[in-house]
Length: 213
Image (cartoon, rainbow, N blue to C red):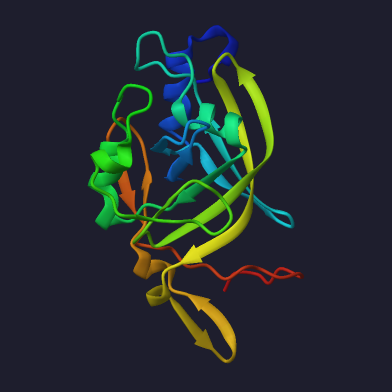
């Protein structure tokens, strides 16, 4: 069966995407707006977009949960300041992340609501989550307007923070123990998440392709 997206409503198009494009990493976006108010919210339309320059992208949809509010607080703050932080979400922070997804009134500090300890960032005014496994300080690289109250935020990573317990050395090369981070991602249906703990390993093929034995 095929679906012509122009023939569908917004909810149907969204359902087709989020129930098929899985798993999706979670960008736990932290901002401080022009009035100095902090905000934290998770977004799963997210991924890395390149290494030079080091870019990541986050899709932010219009705010459909709060009457009279058209734009997510994260997007508004990024427009005002041009900077933000992204933390990756591990199993230990899953419940706190879920709290920060609440449809709180504009200006509410979700970090305080979720009782999350924070620490200052190095290059930006937005805070960092003190015990997140990995996080990125970002400067807005480009904002792609996709509709009223919606945009794709492309950020340049200025500083990467990784907790020391996940770092090691192997023959003089930096090693990152990603499985030990126990990251989670979004999968099909509302409220469904996946653990990053059951990887499938395949060595990359090289030319010429050898026949299967």
